[in-house]
Length: 213
Ligand SMILES: *[C@@H]1O[C@H](CO)[C@@H](O)[C@H](O)[C@H]1NC(C)=O
Image (cartoon, rainbow, N blue to C red; front, side, top):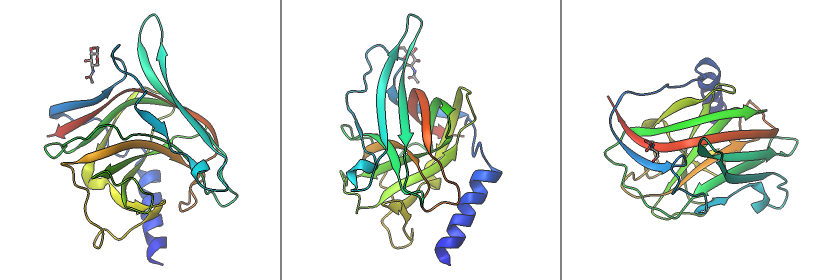
């Protein structure tokens, strides 16, 4: 019952507020990843998809795109979920540690195309990389086929373990002074009323931390 209400709230927030939160007017920022910069690379990123479980059949890749005019990075995903929606494709950077305590959220400069538009960002702290340890996640739906800036307030990140929401009152809060994993994921939606499957792409220019006014 409790979980049902949470799902309903999530569903309501995704459906009634698809853009969730738009661009914020920020007074300060820290660039975490700038894939438009020629010195940037995706080499520090790893794939974390459902094939880490026995039944998983999904696949993702994170690659650099370099043209004569610009460059960015692209997260391609193929979601092959179980009939109940179980399945996910993800990428993460676990090579850096960030103190983001003076910022209010993350801002992504991205464009989503393909079959699916609901993504999540997953944060972890203190090098807690086990899927049994809590992760801190936020769902958002991106506009279709449009370059956009998506603001994701830290206050809206909630604790999860293996895709199941945890009680925020009994889970340690995210320690923003020591963020050691930043990831992106697209899910089949086993615990959600919305299901996703198939192929999608997310072009990423940058991921920055911002302090919103
Ligand atoms: C990314 O790098 C480019 C080229 O160096 C620069 O012009 C741009 O301002 C940077 N963007 C961010 C968000 O730091």
